[in-house]
Length: 100
Image (cartoon, rainbow, N blue to C red; front, side):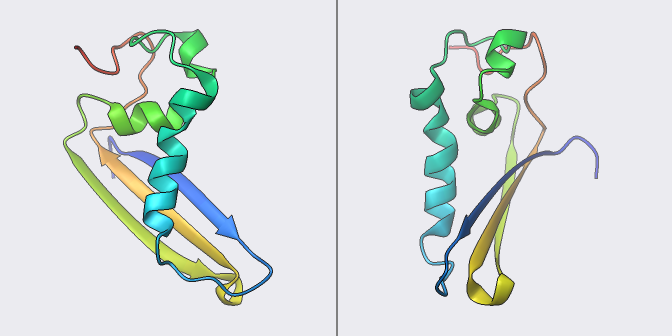
């Protein structure tokens, strides 16, 4: 499929885990990149792109109109993988993440 952005999140444990709450944990983890790394500009400059907030900017990308997410349990129940795909894709250099 063309023009899709994607975020991945994996949680692992030595004990079995379930998917309960993992979608929320994934989206919180991605959104927390803004607080963890800062967000110096609403334009995706090379510095912003390389700062570690790519998951968060994809979630906030103004041209994205469709989001689909799925989860699966892996490794005999010791891992959960969360995948979200975004159309239209975001994170294009020198474009605005959003226009206020």
